[in-house]
Image (cartoon, rainbow, N blue to C red):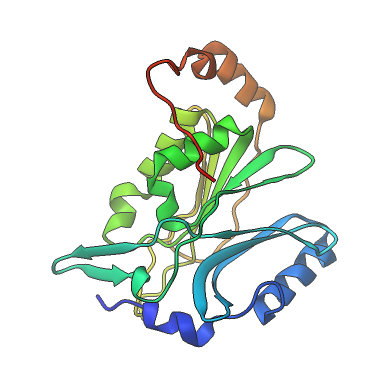
Length: 230
């Protein structure tokens, strides 16, 4: 399978002044919603990042997340993809607040790194959100599994948002956007085609699960710990 990383430079834009950002800002403002958009290739000087942006109901930029873990894999006979040949990794984690809960943001391959999700949970996040595009090899094997694992391990909701599948593209996405509950249940999901799904983030249910199985109070921080460096 051919990779699509060669297109990053061609379609890169500045944040928050590029055309994608302007469109996202307008959509958030016109509909009075919090909107997470992307990811898109961001150009900052001569450097390219894989970036997701967060917009407030007034259209202002709330946060941006530059993908921390670059997708460098080589599965013989199936897929080779080397983001590091084009992109630079982000250097910070990203959370933002809404009137309802705090949200931790990652992009695609960031989902595989459990320490990042744990730090978000310890910073008070109730929802983890990952725009991503797993492929036709890793998607059926790990997409749902990782969402449920991040949710159960950290007692949070996890939402994965994928593009629809386009079999004519150079990189074919698995699709299957979903939301997993802190109990590890998939509470909303779709197939490979373009559609819209909805899910309630039930904070009372979240509280009940944390009270019934108080992982946060039972961690042996005298034996192990997960620490954010920056």
